Structure formats: C-alpha cells, structure tokens
Image (cartoon, rainbow, N blue to C red; front, side):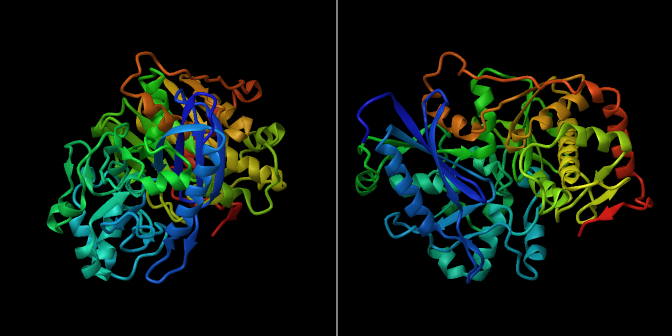
Length: 482
C-alpha cells in the first residue's frame, strides 16, 4: 500500500462495453484510471459476461492502484441493464449461480409474450420494454423459465454495483437508484416492489435496502490480502452510473438543472420533470437519484446512431467547422432512427435516412452525424421540460463543436459543459463523504463558444428537421442505411 498522500476512493465503473478502475480523491478528482473491455462469452446457456475474467482484472487493477495511492474506500457504479443471480458463498469463484446475461442478447421465442402481461404499469417498469434482454426483471424471468431449480436454490439477485459490494464483503443489499434504472423490479414513485416480484415469489432474492453512500461492510480478509489493502477498507453500496453522474452536480449544489450525458447512449436527467410528463413512447423513463427520489429521464442510443451515420471510414480528429456550416446551409439532414430502437421517435427504428444533398466526403458524413446527435440532444431536453440550466458531459464533448451546436440550437437556455470526462467516477467518489459534506463539492463548468456564423441558420434548420420527421416520409431520401 502507498504510504503517502491523502486517502482516496477506488471506483469500479462497469460499463456495457468497457470497464474502468479509478483512483479518485474524495472531492471528485480522478488521479489515475485503468481500463479494459468488458469480456463477453457466446454461451451456452446465453451470451454472457465473463465474470471470472472480469473479477481477476478488477482485483489486479485495484492492487496496482493501491501500490500508488492510499485507497481506503471502494465503490462500484454500473450500467442499469444487468443483474447477477448469486449463491450463498462470494468466495466460490465469481459467486454466480447462472451466467450474467448480456442485455443485447436476443430473447428466445415466446419469452417476451409471456413476460409482457407480468411487467406491470409504466411506473412499475420505469420505462418502455426495450431491446434484447434489457431489464433485470426480464433477465430473471428468463433464468427462471430456463433453469427453475437453479433459481430456486439461489440466494440473491443483485444489481451490478451491489454484486461487486457482495463479492468484496460478503454482504448483500439492494439500492434504489440501480433498481430505478429500468429494472422493471422497483416502482420509484410509490417506493415499492413491482408486482412481478411478488407474483413470481422473488422477494426472497431481494436483499434489504441500503443508501448508495452507506457502508455495506469491510473487505473480506482474503480479498484485502489479494488487493494489498487494509482489512479496515470499507465498501459502499454503490449506484447506477447515470444517477451517480447526476449526483456529481447535485453534490455541487446545482438544482433546476438538466444533465445530458453522452456515449453509447444519450441519457438526459432532470430533477424538475414532473412524473406526469413522462411518456414511455418517446424514450422517457422514471429513474431514481441516489436519495431514492424520482428523476425524469430520457434516453436514446445516440452513440450507435453516430457510428451508423459517420460510417466505418470516419476520419480521426474533430469535425471541421466548415463541413458543419456547408451541410446546414445546403439543407442536408439525417432523419431517425438508424438503430433497432425507436428512441424518441415511435415507429422510426431501422428507418434512418439522409435527406437532401448528400455529404461530399467522409468528413461531411462525420459532421452530419454530429449535427444529428446535437439535434437528438435538444429533443431529449425538450422532452424533459423547461429547465433553464443545461449541463453536457460525456464522450461527445471530445468534439468541440458538439456543445457549441447544442447551445446554438437552444438560445434561450444556459448551456454549460464539463470538459472533464469522468463524471461517473467523480460522483461515485463523492459518495464517500456524503454524510459529512457541509459545503458544495467543487466543480468547474465551461460555456461553449458561440457559432456566430450559424446563428440565423440553426433555428430554421432545426424546424425543417422536425417537419421532415413528422411528415409521411414521402420525400425521396439521398441515402438509406440498413
């Protein structure tokens, strides 16, 4: 263990595609990050995450960070579409009773039809029923139909962050923000289990609740030795990654704010969206913040759509400003949706088209993808309602024009961006001092540079884009992607 410097937090960040282990100060500054892909195996019994390989990599990474930083707390964040059915003993390999389903795994015939009548109301689910094996309740339903005896003998069904807390400490908890991330297990508004839990006898698999910042326990002695940490190192309950990213701004004292995070998904959250406004047919969700309160949410698979529009030959580096200006001036549009999910536009899945003069080259295709994702962002914000303050973060900010385009499309809102691309890790680390915090956590936000050459063009372009989406698509497209 390092023997100098202030103590800090090890944050395990489990994404669908990538996994990171971070050393983060208790005020949210990331000191070091190690990353790897999240390994997936083909099956049987279904495509699943390789928890054994992932455990070995995560433990080795924490040990490596412990040699350079004084780690005394561990917390995990996770994407909201995964759960792990476990047995009694966290020391028995990965502890999993059945492999953890990859949520993009197609479902077996008939499973969705059997699941739908059990899934409850919109607020029981927190979202529409989404693609593949998304939703923890649907995964557990599949497991129970495929392996009823194994499920009957299992001890717990745990969300991703709570699985890692259990693996490290042996103690099992449930946590509201992760269950509130479209699990279909928890009704956030009414603070109760969804009907499917009681109908199928799953209460016995659901451990008692803990707050995201609460200590689940201390490291199991054999784990402490393996990681090179003191046995007094504590493990927090952890939370949903997007809820932790929003918590980054809550901890900084911001309210009446909409936060849009970008990556594989464009995810928008607002603490001002009334639950009555939420529309499951427009990609809207009822999420939970780390305190268990409802958060208006909206999500669409913007990262995947960006790749589909930009193409395999997209050039490296940021989009050129003149390419954006030319496309907007000549009226070239990308119209939704380019993936298998409707997102904000019901019935649009797989119907993505480019309309108008086609992009001249690979740079212009990448520029069109960026414009399209900026427009998707404004749609997300319009769905969430009238928040005067908007904060952008995530991977799209690697291109400086993204924030500028969003700000140009929303002239009546105060748009900021966080150029530090580790909001989830920062939010998770800030949990370590949640109970003791007496002043807002520091945060540094920037305003985008105005796109003065496009000020008069963007409102017209945006209005035309919306009208093209709303018409009957009788116009002849420049290019259709399948």
